[in-house]
Image (cartoon, rainbow, N blue to C red):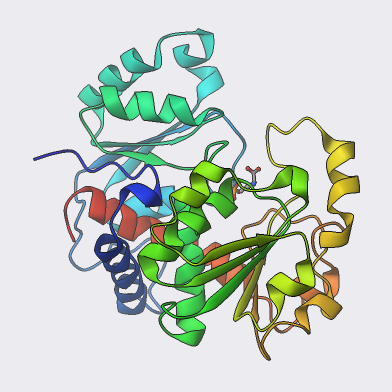
Length: 307
Ligand code: CP
Ligand code: NVA
């Protein structure tokens, strides 16, 4: 059987993405009210070990994957890449071969997307992309889960992305056609999503404009993210270019009544979003953060052919 890597949403067909979302909803509901440390009744990854490798900082990804593997009945080994020989130049392919002898799956947060692809090519166990410079697929599973909890299936919805056409935006683009939602993106011309990612929308209805009000008009949910991602060096140029793309109450008022506000976090209040929006009644950012755990569990179960 081929190894199921979770590298990018465009590499996974719509039926599997739907199954991952359904699994996340189901597992979350099945353990409502349980203590965090109790293992799910079916313990689907009992005795499995997940390695987690971080080349960049993380709070949500680190804690959610660690909690996820424990709730599925397994355990984790976590390392910062700088503490590994990887950080001293050991080839990523050799790292993949070694870890594949000791663990059952590898989650990696990497600086360069290509390194994750190389790791997966050399590994004999599933590899999960925990964010790269190009994409953040686990985040989008959690985000769609959050919208569906409040509003039902995303198929047919109109979602708006305001700000940087970055890694998180790319994964949202990849999901659009596969899960059947429209996506309206507003970003400055110099920070447009990659054309390759737009081509990977899976026949999605995706449009890009420089007019934030136009993108948000009537949308069911509004997303934004930091203007300066990890690894970006042009901080001052970005703050200047993104100034008209702050999600404030005036912009949210153009979306559908009761539209949801999403942000993967960490947020920079007063830059990409105002306090009134992120801390206001339409914001679901902390449900979204919690849902990283439930999303991660479904992704891991899928990697082990459990769904
Ligand atoms: N949203 C997200 O991936 O957060 P961390 O960087 O804290 O993992
Ligand atoms: N776009 C952000 C997401 C952080 C979770 C970054 O890459 O830094």
